[in-house]
Length: 395
Image (cartoon, rainbow, N blue to C red):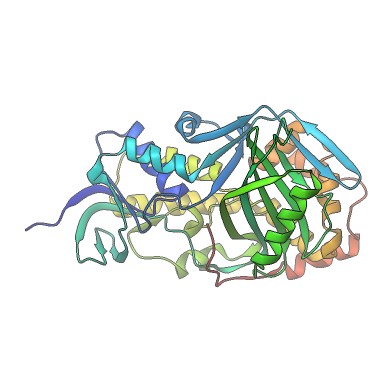
């Protein structure tokens, strides 16, 4: 019996793999796409958020995935509070899984599919099945980022069901008025409904270890301080993400390369070096892959490699800021960097999060009295952080 075949095999039904599958289904319907996900559903248990200003072509692909949307957001710091007008959106794993199931043919979405071997033209599963493919894209995340250095953004988040409405009209994207601990700490609060709020306790830390019991206690304390009476915790997520300050891209790519197998998402280093945002970057790659004339394994691998290399080149400024944040500021004083940043113009802030800062933006961010000692800022560029491998909890 011949092996089942597909044009494009996508490994990993998380954000990056899911968006590639949805983009190909919408824009290249003539192609047979098969998505392999090791879990019981796609996306795991996550909330991914983005600013509407992050997006360009392909924004319509995200619309069915959006679980909540707001026309602005708040930030809070010890000496600054600000309301910004940029539209903000959140995507949930539940919506991603549902849209993939409704969009792809049943035989094109395989959950519980543990991949044991990959070549440029074949995928082997733990149950012995072998699928042939014209091209394979590996989007299964990463166990680390070898040959890169920086710090960590780690967090625990809970969806809280409240006994009475919380009163929030817009999300609090960054509340750094909380006590600082383990680096730069802030709380993130998304009001999904009038009595449900997603609260995430986040740290820009020098170490990747996450003390979940402590973070749970701090989330409970934050909710109590807002006078939110919690009826139930509906779900919980955790994560430890790399914040990249330096690295050797060519060595990184070579270390994880399987000839003829393309890479996407964190496996390709496709995340914002300082914020760890990945959704807009994942969408851009998904849209780009739809424009390729040739979709052989080698051609798709070459396209993903070129895309990731250009992303690395364009991230130089953000890596420098990462190195300065971790190397120049005392851990409990890092909030001052972001406090100052949020005093800048709203269009500049939008371009920063989109990873599209102009030369003038870069000069403005660096101009004026620095919130960290100048000598320490210069010295920090020599060290540039801790190695970012291995790591087992990237999302």
